[in-house]
Each structure stands twice: as structure tokens, then as C-alpha cells.
Amino acid sequence: MSFQPAIPGLFSPAKGAEPVQAHTPLPPTEKQIAYATTLATRSGTKLPENLDRLALSKWIDAHKAPVPQGRFSNYPSSKQVAFAERIATLKRNPVPPECFRDRALMSRWIDSNKPR
Image 1 (spheres, one colour):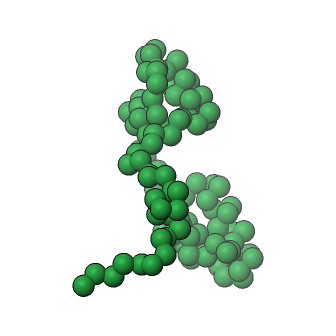
Image 2 (spheres, helix red, strand yellow):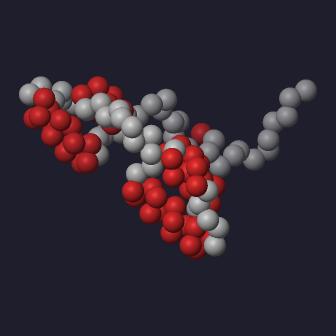
């Protein structure tokens, strides 16, 4: 025996809800377009037309400059450190010293201590 609800649900077609399409591509943001245009100009390549947000993001990832690797590449950014120190001041909880040597640790500390 199967259970049949007497009243249709809020999002059921009986209430006039439209079926949701599987994937509706979003248009790219203005910042994405501006950054992609800058990358295309610098590299001398042509920017593809009619790309959705996801496709343009993949194009940007393929054409942007690689992250420089060096002695300090794993250290947190100055903005990350400043934000963590603001949180530490608000929460009266110091940032652990090891967070200043690893950007992933700093990110985890920030996420776990952000004011809600």
C-alpha cells in the first residue's frame, strides 16, 4: 500500500508549479568578462563568444598565469593575516603561530572563528 497525500505539495504541478529544467546556464558576470578580456589582450588570443559562466571560468583558468612557486608561496596573504587578527581581537582569542606559516591552516582558523 502506498501513501498518497490528500493535499498536493507546495511545489507540485497540481499547484501550478513549473517543472525545473535540469541545467540553465548562467550568463558570465561583468568581472569575469573584464578579467577574461584582459587575459585575452595580454596573451594575444581571441576571447570565445557566447560562453556561459562555467565555460568562461574554465577558459580563464586555462589562460591565467600560473601561481608563482617560491619560498613564501605557502604563507598566508597579508589580507588573510589582517582579517585573522581582527577576528582574534574581537574574539579575544590569539591566532596560533603555526597559522602564520601555512595559508591552509590560516584559512581553517578563520573559518572556524569567524563571527556569525
